[in-house]
Image 1 (cartoon, protein in one colour):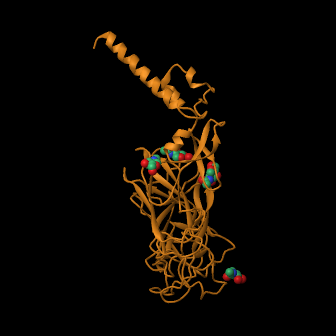
Image 2 (tube, helix red, strand yellow):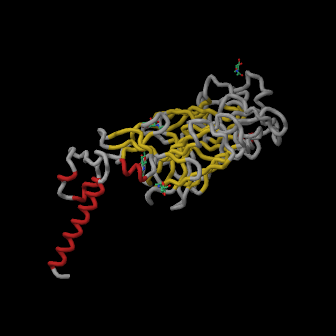
Image 3 (cartoon, rainbow, N blue to C red):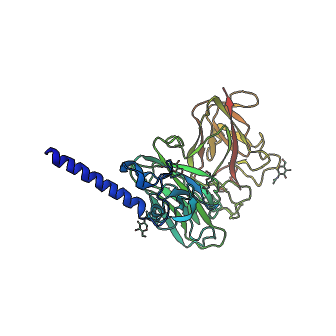
Length: 394
Ligand SMILES: *[C@@H]1O[C@H](CO)[C@@H](O)[C@H](O)[C@H]1NC(C)=O
Ligand SMILES: *[C@@H]1O[C@H](CO)[C@@H](O)[C@H](O)[C@H]1NC(C)=O
Ligand SMILES: *[C@@H]1O[C@H](CO)[C@@H](O)[C@H](O)[C@H]1NC(C)=O
Ligand SMILES: *[C@@H]1O[C@H](CO)[C@@H](O)[C@H](O)[C@H]1NC(C)=O
């Protein structure tokens, strides 16, 4: 190519880019086109390539149930978002992206809600959302159950009225139901495949059924990424871990053998990871105090004496735990520092233990039936667990 022609083409490319950038920034009907870098107006910027960034697309708080991202008005419209206010010193628009049944999203921080949220959803249909990666550097989807109230499982722990199923990812997610507000799960993407979140609420029953889940796409290099395969991931020196659908009120639905139902969900087999914080080498676990039901994993809650629930007398471990249990690797008794020698815990009480094995991880196993059949003593009215953890300094 001769020199003149080459320069001509460079100039025309520059003109084209400048024109496109100008158009992109000036065809909006509001003032969101001003750059926040030094507050300059776009028209004064001579070099067009850098003018695409106008202001940081940071989080902005919106309603009390959803946060938005600070975007230009037109960008928000392109995402089918809802503008809830201004941000970036009124140059941006706080844009909330929420989706309900039968939609697809590839937008970070999409909220998936029940129809008419926060009003109760009567049910009568299955509802799904298909989540695609927003780019090919995304490894994981963090799903925060900001509000999740579905029907309780049947008395045997099976989610037969309502169910939340998450498929397509590389992490096995148990089928969930009941009350799970406040729980967060992490689902690895399986390459470019979409993750589908399905809430089947096929039986129309009237109670406060509703959900609002925040879906955050985490890049492969994101510091908040859960280690591969961990369904739940806790950070911080201390915290409280609860099983899915944990709660103190009994499940009102009777089991197959007509005894008080369980809140524990059947067939959950998953790992809970806890980030080892800098300067900490061990982790103590203890059931939540002041709550008689905070470790009721197997056995007969109704038949047990009140003085047994939550005590060493109610605690069972080792090979005696065959159906539902929590696994803590190589524990020692926190009070005595004596090795326990086994790593399975079940029954109606939990003696505080400490583990120094890394990584910090707790496994949860429940079998196919949480009802009163198939085990001695039978499982009656179990609630699951609420366990506090606290890391110990090196
Ligand atoms: C909104 O963001 C704030 C600050 O990061 C956070 O504390 C809050 O939980 C978020 N709320 C929702 C509904 O996502
Ligand atoms: C926005 O809605 C339109 C019309 O329903 C649809 O074609 C488009 O794909 C949607 N865009 C996004 C980002 O969801
Ligand atoms: C999605 O949003 C969260 C929080 O707003 C942020 O930490 C994360 O990096 C974002 N993901 C991508 C791919 O930008
Ligand atoms: C909890 O246990 C205490 C004794 O350990 C008992 O007095 C109390 O009634 C129990 N509460 C419930 C709700 O069972």
